[in-house]
Image 1 (tube, rainbow, N blue to C red):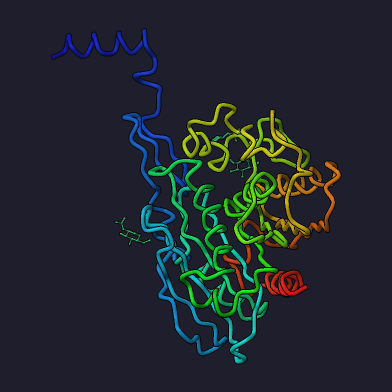
Image 2: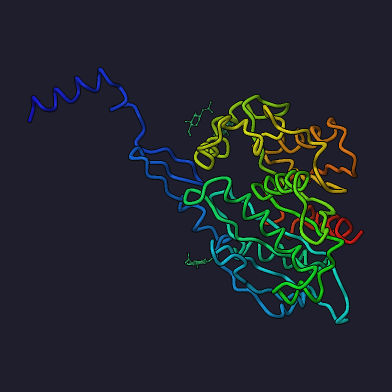
Length: 340
Ligand SMILES: *[C@@H]1O[C@H](CO)[C@@H](O)[C@H](O)[C@H]1NC(C)=O
Ligand SMILES: *[C@@H]1O[C@H](CO)[C@@H](O)[C@H](O)[C@H]1NC(C)=O
Ligand SMILES: *[C@@H]1O[C@H](CO)[C@@H](O)[C@H](O)[C@H]1NC(C)=O
């Protein structure tokens, strides 16, 4: 036994990986990466009260917003939570917002408590129908699964202009006012969907009217102004290679770095107006949000572009703290944005 141990340690000196390599990379709150190549979802996120499954309600007593869950793509089991605001006139049509939740493409859900309470308020205050998609997540479903589900969901919504299966959309959706919105990874999905719309048409002549990105998730290997020096040491930076192992350029892949090598001009963003929101204390992603806004501006994109910075709040603030003054301000701006 003793000899075995000595040989083992001698080997470790020759191949330091045996000793010094971590058995485990902690990418909280997203993933746990084990040396054995096993990747699993971090339990930190699953235990957050904001992730707790919340039942939909057919008539929320405070807002009169109704919500329900439906499977939109049986083949992939992609479902969505749909919100219908209080509409008394049976003929009335209201804008449609397709929403993508955040969570680094690995965690989060359209059915969590945080998203549910935020989107119930948005549906009520903005008087819009919201379709919040439970797109597929890594590590089981790597990029581009999330983007494919997002684009398919947008096509699914557009298909309701002439028929369709979802009565709330058929009866009350105004398909001249279709918007996309999301926070964090959901904001990244918004960008990719609007770029996709620049290359491919939607059914029934539906167009994206506007896009809202709240504390969006973008990366890049070159630091940008205001970025923390240790940005590359954060989970949000490191997790991308596990979320998209097939991305040739890593964090410079055009889906996560919209100004990366080979990325098409941001001029091709196919919608009329874009609102980007950053949080002042979002140390990890605030700088990238501002950088993205400046990138669109510099591209010569023709449309109405706005950047807002919420003071004293951080990443995905309207979901973490919907009662904050800044979240209320955001919801007011959103109501104007979606109604005009
Ligand atoms: C389908 O998704 C729901 C929640 O989105 C989940 O509860 C269910 O287990 C899934 N079914 C399959 C067959 O994966
Ligand atoms: C990087 O993160 C590790 C823990 O995850 C920490 O021990 C180390 O000090 C960090 N390095 C820098 C430069 O921040
Ligand atoms: C980055 O540095 C800040 C302070 O300089 C520290 O609070 C934070 O934990 C660091 N993050 C990582 C991931 O190392």
